[in-house]
Amino acid sequence: MAHYLMRFDDINPRMDWQRFLRIKNILEKYKIKSILGVVPDCRDYNLMVSNNFPNYYDYLRKCKSYGDVIAQHGYTHLYDSNSKAIFANSRNSEFAGHEFNKQLKKISKGKSLLSKEFLWEPVFMAPAHSFDKNTLRALDKLHFKFILDGFSLFPYKEDNLTFIPQVSSFPLPKIIPCISQLCIHINTISDKELERLIIFIDKNHNRFISINELRLSKKYLKIIDKKLTFVSIKFFRYLRNFFKIFNKLLINILCIKQRTFYKILFKNKSIYDWHLNGTFYCRKYKMISLEIINSFKPDIYIDIGCGLGEILSKVKIDSLYKYGYDSDLRLKNLISILYKNKFIFFEREEELFDHTLLVKKRKDLILISMLGFAHDYSKSEIEKMILNYYKKIGSFILLIDAFYVKDKLYKYNHHEFFFNHIGLVKFLYKVDKLRSLYCIKIGK
Image 1: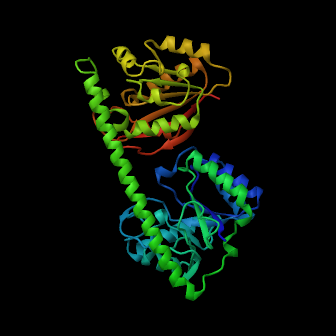
Image 2: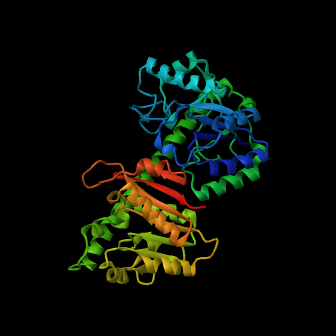
């Protein structure tokens, strides 16, 4: 029968702490000890999705006292190498491919930072599961004892290091005799996956163990175990990559289909080209924005600069509570052709504000998106616009983008303002070739 280890990757001061603490409280309810993969000096914007967690190191020391294991998760979590690793599926790496002394220096600096905070333990997990033989030499020299990776069903020992296998992010079936190390990326786990994980913990809490309870695989089983697991993982990765390629192809087909449909439908209509070329399935940021909006489950959704209303039409709330505004008044008739009765379009902002106040209830969650045009406004103009919305309709969640590409077309870059805003609740770095996305709580 399977036994489970709970592992969290990418621990840093700006991760999604609300989600993490939700799971952590359930784990502590059942006295389950976790493995916390702490990035010693996190510089990876992809991992920084919210504001700084208060008393970060004090909390981690509290976790360590509770019995959680602190694992060193690389050093900065920046991928600066493109090299094949021992176990990883991707060639992106912080370690693999670098010479021994460079890897030794990185790992040593990370160890020093954790030791300074009384957090270091001889446990290592590599970002992207990517490392090579030089990494193992460096870990041995720096007195690490455990590395949280390996293709096997049970822990095994090689080169003075104990490898604790990590073959699946989520639990392997209970009927398989194995150690299943759950690899949770709290910033990216979906709502459905999160709920399934919580249910699994509730039902199987008695099957969770800690590193101290592990036993090594017997020598005569180790070779068979590793080879069979290796073949199984390679087959699974092949299937997963196939479906990724298939999904990407499907999106491209939908993009072409949608562009063609729009150009035929709006032939000889007065409309900007970007509405015809930047259709929903042709712009990744639109698809991601839709996922974000639906994840908040707003009572009222307002899209400022809504264009043809592609995102508005797909948000999962009643059409009576979805409002669009755009200064291009030519869009009104086109929207009535394309998305009749799927949302309400306003020609004047004041009418939008008046209607919102008329229908909103005291505890309604309002989400406002401002996508694709913030770069045309200065910081003071953006602040004034946000303040005006707050005065008119009260508190809301703002979804906005900032372009990181330097170009004459993109006059202003507001990354620092949005990223360091006191109300930041969600940040997605470089969602496409142009922009990052920010969700900011405005008001109480």
